[in-house]
Length: 197
Ligand SMILES: [Mg+2]
Image (cartoon, rainbow, N blue to C red; front, side):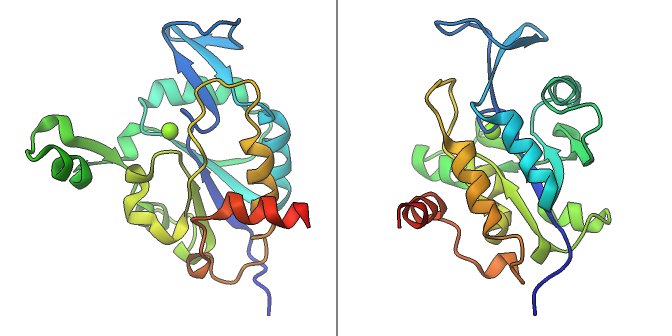
């Protein structure tokens, strides 16, 4: 039996869909928000349009709510059906255990805003076995292990093709029964091999 409920894909913004920087790169930026020069990840428009055909889509970033709203306004088409757009106010402040272990001490600098997926469930946006979170920063999704897909970090590289591969990979998950039972750590390698054969 296949799963007929559309899955929810929750997208991060910075370094996943865009790269925003105060200091411009060696080329002209795509747009500017709150003093940041913003570069769109290559293939962004195509990726978003493809995604909404088979998935429910939402945005969750740990940046300020105002910044998130401003970025979403520019990169998503006006009539794009977004389930929700969340910023830092929906994140949970938590100690980054890995950073503490590595440094040998613990202070405020090790506090991070993390995204707790159970909040998405609690607020009525679906079941955990039916949602995915796409985030370039694993520790921000550390509580969402079975739901997370980690794309590479986008720093503005014009030759980047991560969204193309991500689109193809997500296509293989449309009918998955329980997203949490699928090994996703090696997603890029898997999908590249699939397309080679
Ligand atoms: Mg990010």
